[in-house]
Length: 105
Image 1: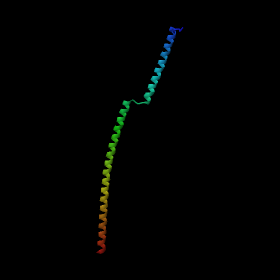
Image 2 (image 1 turned 60 degrees about the vertical axis):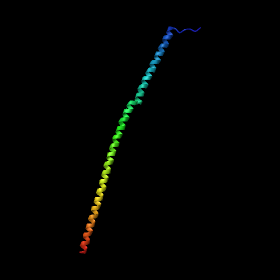
Image 3 (image 1 turned 90 degrees about the horizontal axis):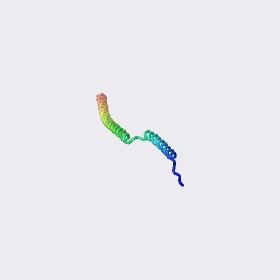
Image 4 (image 1 turned 180 degrees about the vertical axis):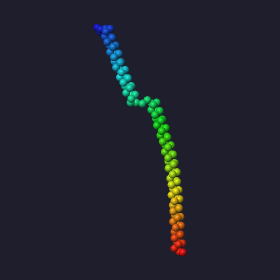
């Protein structure tokens, strides 16, 4: 015949179940703490991503403005170079004409 567990055995088994559940809950708490250290919540990630994208957009705007300034400066430099070249040629032609006039005359 099968003997039914005594009240003491039932209590010991319940105590063992309670201890196992407490250990399991402790492990779950530790795992949750470790997960919080390792992983980022999606809303935090999304907010940070939006900030990064805004910063990238600002940098792109700044780069575009610098490119425009550079192009403007390059255009001015070309203009100044052409002006200086024309002035140099004019002066050289004037000096050459003056020398020709002096030597002929």
